[in-house]
Length: 323
Ligand SMILES: NC(=O)c1ccc[n+]([C@@H]2O[C@H](COP(=O)([O-])OP(=O)(O)OC[C@H]3O[C@@H](n4cnc5c(N)ncnc54)[C@H](O)[C@@H]3O)[C@@H](O)[C@H]2O)c1
Image (cartoon, rainbow, N blue to C red; front, side):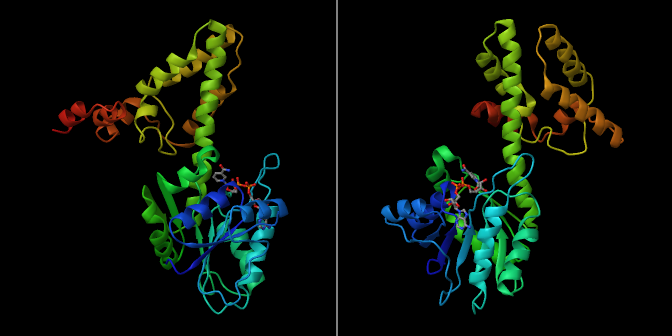
C-alpha cells in the first residue's frame, strides 16, 4: 500500500488535511488544484503539487476527490466537482492499471453512482469497478481542527459495490484508528455524511430557538441547556429516537411540544422549529399505523441505565448495572 501514490484532487481545507495526513503516515502524495495561488501556497510548504492530474506511467493509485460542493440556494452546485471529476476521467483513459477513485467531498446521496460514475466512464471509456475502482469515503473533519481530526478520526465510513475497493481503503485508513464502518451502497455513505451535518445543525438551531425564549424570561440558557444535555434521553442515549417511521406518542411529548408553542407565543416568541417538530410528527402519525410510546422507547433502549451511567462517566454505577 505504501508504494501506491495518493492523488488529492481539490487541495483546499479537506484536501490539504487529507493529503498531509497521508504524507505524515508515510504515503506518497501528489496534490492537484486549479487555483494558482493555492498551488503556490502548497508548493511553498514543500508539497508535490500540480495543476493537472497525469496518470501516464503511474502504477495503481488512489485518487481522492476533495472538490468543492457548495450550495446555490436549495441545491448543491456540483459544477466544480463535476469539472474536477471529468479531468480525472480523462486522465484514466488509456491507463493499463486499475486506479481507484474515492469520493471524499460531501455530496447528495446517489452522486457517486450517478454523476461521478457517468462522468468517469464517459471521459475514460472504461467501466466502473472494471477499468477503475469507485468508492465513497466521506470526510468528517472540522475546519478548525482539520489536521488533528484527520489524524484521529472517531468514525470512518467506506462504501463501494466492489469489496476489493473496500479492503484497499480499510488497509489505508484503519491505522488511523477510531470506529470503521463499511457499506456496499455509496449512497448510504453519502446519506450518513449529509445526515451527520444536518443533525448537528438541527441541534444548534433547537438551542438557539430555546435561547430566544429564555432571553424573554430573563433566564440564562447555559446552565439550563447544560443540564438538559445530561438529563434528556435523546442526549444521553445514542439509540433513542433514531428509528425512522416511528412518530412519538404517549402523553408528555405531544402535550409539552404543543403546550410550549402556545406559551412561547404569550411571551412573543415564534418557534418555527418546534412548530415543524409537531407538524412532522402529525404527518408521520398519519402515514404509519402506530405510534411509539416514549415509555416503550426507554424500555427498548439496550441497557438504558448503563447508557445513562456511561453518559455521566459513572464507572461504579455502570459496573453495578452490568452485574
Ligand atoms: N471544510 C470542512 O470543514 C469540510 C469538512 C468535511 C467535508 N467537507 C467537504 O469537503 C469538500 C471540500 O471542501 P473544502 O472545505 O476543502 O473546500 P475548499 O474550497 O477549501 O477546497 C476546494 C479546492 O478545490 C479546488 N478546485 C476547484 N475546482 C477544481 C478542479 N476542477 N480541479 C482541481 N481542484 C479544484 C479549489 O481551488 C480549492 O482549493 C466539500 O464537499 C465539503 O463539503 C468540508
